[in-house]
Image 1: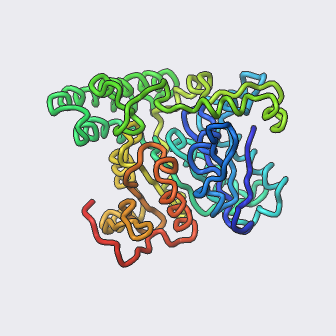
Image 2: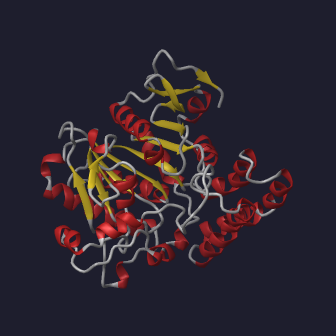
Amino acid sequence: MFFFFFESRTNKEDPVVIWLTGGPGCSSELALFYENGPFQIAKNMSLVWNDYGWDKASNLIYVDQPVGTGFSYTSDNSDIRHDENGVSNDLYDFLQAFFKAHPQFAKNDFYITGESYAGHYIPAFAARVHNGNKAKEGLHINLKGFAIGNGLTHPEIQYKAYPDYALDNGIIKEADHKKISKMIPACEQAIKQCGTDGKDACLSAYFACTNIFNKIMDYAGETNYYDIRKKCETNLCYDFSSMETLLNEKSVRKALGVGDVDFVSCSTEVYEAMQMDWMRNLEVGIPALLEDGIKLLVYAGEYDLICNWLGNSRWVHAMEWSGRKDFTAAPTVSFSVDGKEAGQLKSRGSLAFLKVHDAGHMVPMDQPKAALEMLKRWTQGTLALTDATDKISPV
């Protein structure tokens, strides 16, 4: 498995943070160069420092996963994963190898972060690390928390939120909402069948539920489903071609030691291999982690449609755990950066939910300063501390 590792620009004793990009099958280099990495790509293809890179508050790992993504290649098709068991075991093995190779970081606090389809990867990986620690497997990993940004975690709840979010934001009309909402029961039933039967039933659920999103996009036209303020101009709705050009240069590939492997931003092979995993509910393993004091931060940019804040808020509030009543009753307060509200935060015990203003699917790209501040406060245990300019806001 291929990875980048950047030591903290501030203090080597800062937490170790691993970042997982979603897709499934999209490279974490997308985040490295366009979101929260130390460098960004200039127009002349040189690298320039990112003033808000997360390496200012952490020792930062970006890994291409599942196998087949980015520079993580295989010549054996059996290495291509189809579910979270395979994904999380590979990541756990990677982490064990990483800390053996870098023992000076093994005692640092450890956090798992990522976005989008990583809403599946992250809870599974966090549970694998925590269970490995409890079983005294290999090296102890000092897991303190995990953060999901604009993620897909609980499909049944999140797909039901699509029509509501689209209506609230003027993407569809009331009549459209009524039509699309009639598609929800088929999605719900298919997801239940997936949970019982697995495999082919899960593939059927994928198609039944994505029909809801596709119907909304029929009305939305060229609206960028990662940021509804924008239009889609490419297949991915963003132009990442400069990264592909840079990473496919022979001199760069030689320096990275990846041989003749061609770099592709997102792997179609991995995407298709994970389709039966898509509609599985990964929220189910989270309560046990919260009960053991492992922190969870769920954050979402307010203008993202595809993994929107509304659906994320709903599954977080619906989650059954000992702190649910207190979390539900907690006030929503301003998350301020430099005295200006950058989002709205709800927090109680091990759980926090943050709706980020003026951001789409990729929060660190749209609001880099607020995203870095979020990481700092969360890892330092001060996320819920507010300044004098903050105010109580309605949910």
